[in-house]
Image (cartoon, rainbow, N blue to C red; front, side, top):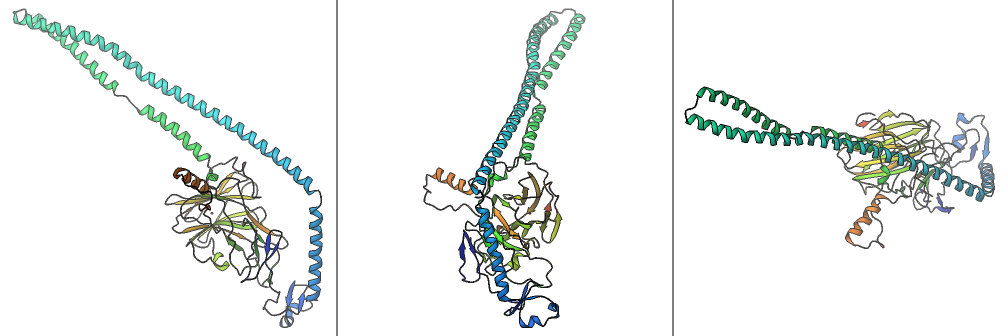
Length: 483
């Protein structure tokens, strides 16, 4: 585990972690301590002893404090060793069997649900095709009738042509004009009927597509609704890691050797300032960053009481910001954060605070989806366990975007955040493979360059939208934590 050490101090490796050798403890004024105030739990120098605040307090020598603490951690270590020997193998095997049963039940469940969905879609398709065919036949039938009537009207027109020729001959031969005029009027009416028929043919032959267009739109509406209720952010999965070399002045954080887990010690490396009423958050960025595209990652937040996750916009390649600068996350225009304080969720951006509707159960695994494919991008936060969208930010960025994370110390409890490995191949690795297949290039010895990453914390106020109501049931059924 890489520690956040000071200067060139070498960390000592212990069981997969790099643990910082902490600085010698002095008093709050930075002077050498001579005694330890057992009442205040802080070391004191000679000047501190003159402070009336410590009058009538209990004191110990620094040697006594060291012996007490060594005895305490020795007992803790023995307890840990004892726990590790209590049927751990049997417990692991039992948990593995239960895990297999749980996963099989979920797989059977969503296989059945997908079957029902397929049946429903096929049923809808059959009805749509039936309606389409009915419309086809309904439009053809009048055409068949017109075709039959057209033959009769053609025969009538041919006969009228013969009758008119006969009338012309009779007029030339001096026949009775009165009788001929009556016949001409009768023929005129027949010609008007024939003319009206051909106008009708012209009108009917111009096919009205409005009914077909309405049917097409109804199917399109179904597709749009399916897309809306079936978000698939995990298609854009990124295997991000914590920055292994963050602020070197911070000796309170530890990062695992695989850079997938960050720890915050419950013990302070320096005395707490007397007037300080609330713990200061500690921030860390991801190593990766992006300027475009769609990206998704998950964070296990179940082992941290107060946390914040989100993104920040920074100039890529610039000097990493200090902890003091990171404390502005969510308080400026360049950062978007979702914060949880003892389970209460809040969305933060540009010093605007919006309360987030609380899910039925406390969020223990958080999904983050960043979409920078449009002018107005979005950042969405998902409750993976509950299967719902918690909050969505609308954002517009021009520089690199880093995922960011923060933890707050809780006395007596080790706090940690874990970047989850979903067991999926990161999106950019897949893209690189596809490109190499298309070009025929051999990338077997080439390091992956596609996995870009992030370094910061994220996710209604001005410039933000409220949470989506989209349901993503079954959202986390395939996922497994990083081992």
